[in-house]
Structure formats: C-alpha cells, structure tokens
Amino acid sequence: MRVTTKPVSEYPWYIRPFFWKQKRKYGQVLEPGLVWGRSPKLFMGVAFLYGMIERARNPLEPALRSLVTVRVSQINHCRFCVDVNSATLMKRGIGEEKVGALEDWRNSNLFDETERAALAYTEAVTRSDQEPDDAIHAELRRHFDEDAVVELTGLIAFQNMSSKFNAALDVPPQGFCRLPQTGPQAPQGGRHAPQAGE
Figure 1: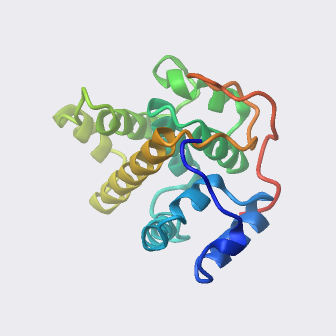
Figure 2: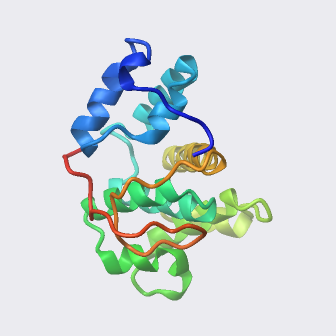
C-alpha cells in the first residue's frame, strides 16, 4: 500500500464507530476506511454518500448494485474492491459461476436483459474511451425509470471514485472472496464472504 495507516485508537473519536461497525460486519476493519480516515472530513463525506447509495429504499435491487460495483472495480483494477464486492455479490444470491463470468458478461447467457442494459451503461460511463450514447440510453430506459437511472449513474460514479482511489494507493484485497481475480497481483486464497452479516 502506498500510504500508511494508523491504529484505530489514533483516529478521531467521531470516525472510530465506523471502524467498529466494519469490524462487526466484515470481521476486520477495512483498509480503505483507514486510508480515508487520514483525512477525517473526507472520510465523513464519503461515508455519508455510501450510506445513501446503500440505503434500504434504493430503487435498484441489491444484487444489481453489486454487479455494477464489481464490474467498475474490474475495469479500474481495484483488487480490494473486486474482493469485497464479489463477496457481497455472492451474499446477495449470485452464484460463483455468474460472478466468475462477469468480466466477459457479453458472451455469457447468465445475465438477463436488465442486467445487460445496466452493465453496458456501466462500462460506457466507466471507460474513458467510451460514452453512453443514445442507443445505450434507449435500452437503459426500457428497464429503468428516470429516478433509477439517476441512482444507477450515482452508484457508477461513486464506485469509480472509490475504486480509482483504492487502485491509485494500491489498497490490497483482504481475503473476502476466493474467486479468481484478473489483473496484476491477483490475490490467492481467502474466504467466500464476509464473516458477519450486512
């Protein structure tokens, strides 16, 4: 990792409860939280935004949200994000075969039309050499209303920020998922899913 973290006790008191919650949910404190925590005000802003994206009344299904976050993470070569988000995706009911096929979803029959529309949009927003054209938007609108499109776009933008942040600082995976991962320095071994519930 390209920056150092501190013991949890050395972070401001008002962000330490977030670390306690992570440890309870995942069995360990997440490295990105410790990195963001070096700038407590940024940490609080990111934590609030993440909470809004993952709120219970989000119009996007949880499994679809996780498909999107894993795909963005793959494109941006974020080893930590692929690790933790793949584990969450499986916890949300998506099998290993489908998670393993996600990087090549266009050539797989495991993804339905709604997922394909969301993934095509996700890639067009994420890749710097593409953009979501009229055809992509038209297909997206067959499956999502305007509110859901805004939510999906916000999710993609947030995950791009998160995964680029982690990839730039070489935040390592923490062993949540043992599916094969692509890209440089893919981790070996690990658990299938976080130790504690969401």
